[in-house]
Image 1 (cartoon, rainbow over the protein chains, first blue to last red):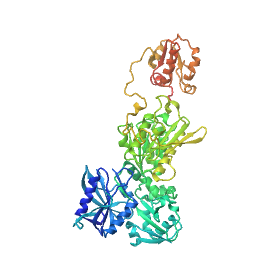
Image 2 (cartoon, rainbow over the protein chains, first blue to last red):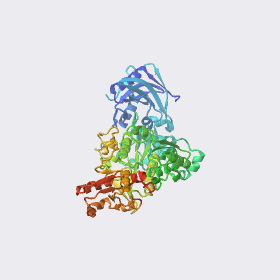
Image 3 (cartoon, each protein chain N blue to C red):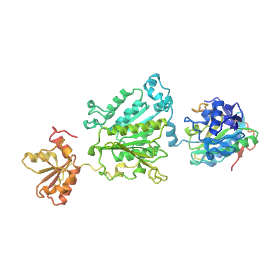
Length: 152
Length: 488
């Protein structure tokens, strides 16, 4: 267990769940924008994987840049990314670990048969050996429409 | 001096700066200088082999270096270099699990292990990391016979942490000429029992798992599942196709080897990028066309060499070093002492590993190889065409003198024979049947009854009236009538 925590607003929680349900049975992905450990906006991004979106997501470099830009526009910083695990538990896979960036918060939402289930947050250990689970808190809704979508 | 833009997740390693300076004439040199100045970056930018991680993108003035000269891309003063993440993830596939197991590092080495493996540890290509990968690895060896013996012994000695062996045979005198896991005192014991003793004595540090079962479509997936690499040391086609298909379906590499007489073959099949056994041989040969080692013989030292090639490939796959025998088919001729290498390609139409596979689960491999199982051996003898060894003995004792023709090869005739028999090897029968009288009674025999059945058919086809095949061949004769003679 990591001692890191992440607070998400109710709107962000809903936006991530809705995104995961809409793309089911494919994986969804997006960026988390906020300040410190509080996420204020979820920015949906297109899943550009070429390995089959049922079990993979990829945010390509150009979309990563957009996400950074969007974070600046929203007056926050890029805190991490979220993605869904269709019909799989909300636990990071070896593949997630192999591709993880340090510092970032990785939020995973399980979507079973089209309905969102558990949501968890994970942080890469500095030596890249494992993902440590952080504590996910629900905070005040700080933004009227948290679902900021870069691509439809 | 060039400016490098640092993405958010890496800024904790650059004292929170979003841009830092580094010097170098190429991107490679620049990144090397960057990681010297900010050592925490190295593990996140580069993998164990020192290559840029796949999700790390480097741009020089907005051009991806993959489309320039990669890490050799020149950088001049005033250029802006950006490190831009790709963010990827997802649920694990079978292939990921295999990849993550292969090359996973085990527990640290104990002092005893450091001593034992010191000749590995002093080579930088192996080192402590490589040895820990071996320690964490699990290899399943199919068969504890000619190939399985050297495979298991070298893998055990090298420190493969978990070594599984599948076999259900017992040790026979005829095994000892090549199956070096087993010794003379082991004759009659299960091969797994003697294998376990030998391997444990060789290396008590490793875990040896034995499975005394006949590998089948029902148990193969479950048996293979926990292992990282499968080593195929089987001697028959149904099992070879079974091992291949199970390896493909589970995404486990198959270190393949086979031997016959003076020739051996080896390759690595069923990797994600490479071909499988079916890409090479989509269909099995007709039953009986390719003889087994029991029928055709095998040079005793041959499996030593081929098995050691298989073990070498397994060790390389585990440590992730060297150039594996993927897409290459090695053929070894012991008599001429020559190696040949054929290029193999993955067949996009392969029924099991192609782009649209039709075999998506294990099938009936006996049937696939044209072997019809189930029909029990008839207990009764067809008196028009066959005779048992006991009947033959009774008739000889009564004074009957049928002509006994041994259709084996001269070297087999030297080992044992039925008294009074004459040698006409099967291949010579068509040109020598004139030496026989078509009206006299003839008993033909070979080692087990297969070749002599062909000889009997031929003789009948050219007008012989009274031809009997000795059922079970000379082996049955020795078992039932004359145990004083040696068997082979």
